[in-house]
Length: 541
Ligand SMILES: Nc1ncnc2c1ncn2[C@@H]1O[C@H](COP(=O)(O)OP(=O)(O)OP(=O)(O)O)[C@@H](O)[C@H]1O
Ligand SMILES: [Mg+2]
Image (cartoon, rainbow, N blue to C red; front, side):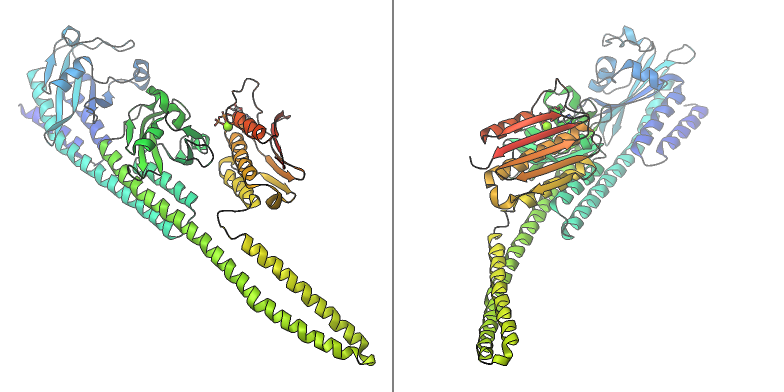
C-alpha cells in the first residue's frame, strides 16, 4: 500500500474510532469510506436480528432525494447478494450483474460498485456499499484493499460502541427499576406506579411511545390502556382493545413477547397504536410471565426508525417482570390500607359503644337522680328544669352516637365503596386525560337508593362518556350531574366539537343498550356548541 494511502486510511480509522456513540461511529464510517475511495455515494446497511437490513445510512443523497426514493432496501438484489455471500464484491456496472433487480423510481443512476461486508466478533453485522467512483473510472483492487482495511479497523470501534450502548441500556434499566421501587416503597398509588412504569419503559427502550394495558373491569374480554406516555399518549389513554384481535392481546394471551419492525404493515395492530400510521417498530411484553400475565407493556417507535434490537426486548422483558411485582405490591398495599381503615372503624365503633355510650348512660342516670331530688324542693324549680334538659341532651347524644356506629359498621366492606365516592373518583381520574377538572353536581340520596347493579352501570357510563370527551370533543369544560329521585338521571355536557352526523356509534351504542336493559333511556343531545349525553333509568326495575 502506498504511504499516502496508509496516511489516508489511518486518518479514516482514527476518525471512526473517536467517540463511543454507535450511531455516530457508523455515520463516520460511511463518510470515511466514501472519502477514502472517492465514491460519490456510500451506504451502510446494518443487519437486524432477522438478518435483513434494519437500518440504512447513506452519504451523497440529500434528504429530499431519500424521501423521493421511499423506503430503504431490505435486502433484495445486489445488496442481498452481499448478505448471502459476505465477501467483497467489485462491479464495473451494477445493472449488468445477474443479481441486480434495478432501481426504484426517483433513484439516481449508479454504475460502478464496491461492496465490503463488516464483521464484529466474527459475525457479519452489516455491509458497506460504495457506488459511482468520481472521475468516471472503476473501483480498483487498491480501493478494495483500503475499504477492507477500514472495515476491519472499524469493527473494533463498532464493537466498542456496541458494548457501550449495551452498558447504557443496563444503566437505564437499573435506573428505571430503582425509580419504580422507590415509588412503591414511598406508597404511591397503583395508578402513579403504572405511569412510572410506562415512562421508565419508554426510557429503557429509547422509544417514542409506551403504554400499559390491563384487563378491563367493565368490558369482558377487553384490555384497557391504563397508562400511556409519548406520541399520541392522550388519545391512547383510556381506550379499550378487544382481546383476540390485536398485537397486545396476543401477548396477553400467550404470555410471550411479540415484536414487529413495522406496526403499520400489520392489520390488527393499528388499534393499539393510535394514531394509526405513526408507529413503526413495536414490542409488546407480558407483565408477569406465562400463566400469570396481569397486563401488557407496549413500546413503539416512530415509523422509519430502527426496530427494537433483541437485547432491548430482552431487557424490557426483565423490566416488565419486575414492574409486575411492583404493581402487585402497590395493589396489596392499597388493600392493606383499606383493611387497616376497616379495622380502625371497627375499633372506633367498639370504643364508642363500650366506653362512650356506657359512660353517658351512667351520667344520664345520676342526673336523673339529681333531678328527682330537685323536684322535691320548690325553690329549685329552674335548676330542676335545666337538669331535665341536660338528661334529654344526653339521650339525644346517645342516639346520635348509635347512628354513627351503624354508619361505621355498614361501611365495613372496603370493596363496597359508596356510589358517591366511586363517582367522584371516576371524575377525578378523568381529570388526567381531559387536562382540566369537570364540574360535578350530585343530588339526592345516591348511596342509599341506587342498587349496586345500577351503580356499576352508572360508573361505566360515566367513564365512557368522559373518555369520549377527552378523546373526541376538544372541549374546555365538562359538566357532570347525577340526580336521584324517583329515577336516576346522569348528564354529561361538554362544550366541544359535537358528535358528527355520520359518527359510527360503538361505546355510545353500549350506553344505549345498558339503559334499555334497565328499562331506561339514553339521549344524545347536540348542543350549541358541544354534546350532552343524558342517561336515565328508573329505580324500581
Ligand atoms: N363528546 C363528544 N364530542 C364530540 N364527538 C364525540 C363525542 N362523543 C362521541 N363522539 C363522536 O362519536 C363517535 C362515536 O363515539 P363512540 O363512543 O360510540 O365510539 P368511539 O369512542 O369512537 O369508540 P369506543 O367507544 O369503542 O372507544 C366518536 O368516534 C366521535 O367521533
Ligand atoms: Mg367511545
